[in-house]
Amino acid sequence: MFDSKKAKWIVWGLGAWLALVEAAVGQEPSVNDQADEVLEQAEPVSGRTLPRAVYIDVPQPIIDDQDPVFPALDRVPAASANPLTDQQEQTLLEYRDLIERIETSGGAWSPDLVEQLAAVGNAQQSQGDHLAALRSFDRAMHVSRVNTGLNTVDQIPIVQNMIDSHAALGQWAEVDLYQNYLFYIQQRTYGPNDPRIIPVLQQLGEWNMQAFGIGLGDTLGLRLSAAQLLFNAAARLVEFHHGRSDARYIPYLRNVVHSAYQVARNPQLISELGSPEFRGDQAVLAAMINERLPSQPAGFIAGEQALRSIISFRQELGDIYALAESIAELADWYLLYEQRRAADELYLSAWQLLAEAENSEALQHSLFGSVVALPLIITEPRMVDRRALGKGPESLTEGFVDLSFTVTRNGSVRKVSVLSDENPQNIIQFGSVGRALKSFVFRPVLQEGVPVTTEDNRFRIRYWY
Image (tube, rainbow, N blue to C red):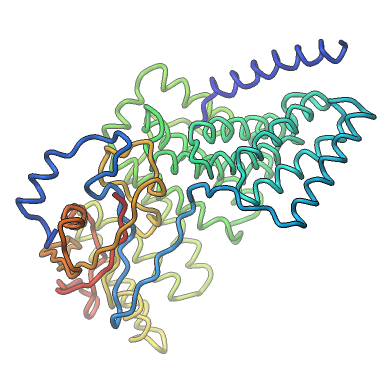
């Protein structure tokens, strides 16, 4: 979420620091009783390895006994600093020698230092020495502020690098602080309607969704509210300045769907946002990005509207398969919220649309020939145990399990069985993954445009515990 208080605190602190500087310068099979008994005795997070799965990844189908390929995590733990090569060490020595010469000739706050300090930080960051990199970036930012002011765009690449290093170190509170500050200085510079603000809106929206995913902060509903406001503003500005044909338009609308999905799934978090304090925080952000503040973040309706906007755009393109995909995704949305008649009608509409194509059977099989985990906009690991709040999957132990299960015509999961070899070390994780899978909804297989129940759907699931 955008925290105006944090941004003001940063500015106040920097102002006080700058005053001092100026003065100085002037001077299981699935679920079994044994697993449940162990789970009841499980302790909360306390630095110990968690005994059951707390994150599970998007299930990947097992096809012809081939090993599924899982995407790499966007967030990875910081590796220890790699040894410098002779060339890298020589480069750093040259930078440091140049810095010393600049300080001798121009003083400790010479503007020429900014570029050199940032270059040293980049070199340290590339070697995985993020603590040293942060020290270099921090000094570069201070020198920049002394010479150009507290809130200038010159700081943007430095702050972005600081965010990257804090993220690599898993220092999420610091990432939150600097993400908000990065937005603050750019919003002050560009205003709410300048096209240059679009990627800024998107980045802060994505960060709020990531922070929500790891449970960072006490008011997670505010994260969702902020993300939805930011994504809506980004999509609106892309359409206004660049048109719906811009490559970012559909991905930004899908981000609106993502935030809407989480809003609908977490009504207890959204109910907390009615207090004057939280309402005020949302109003500040809405005013900064020129968005109307709704009475509360929208769930089902916001997702439906965004998906219909995607369908409307793709109708203009003449790509039958892309249009059928969009119609199927709206059907998926209805299925998630148990509006099965509307879902069935849309699935049939997409099936019939593909029937008009030359290679209709191949296209229909590609889109509807196997079950697919919903919603498609969820591509990151899902938290299935709230005991891991504040921790990302990269901080936990990774495991895999192969499962077989039935998907009903309504997308529900039934009859989960474990295909992987079980032992005392993994039975707890396997059991908790199987239980979590039962809360998933899958797009069912279609036959002649009608959803049908399918058995023995084999998937591999990556999990963290």
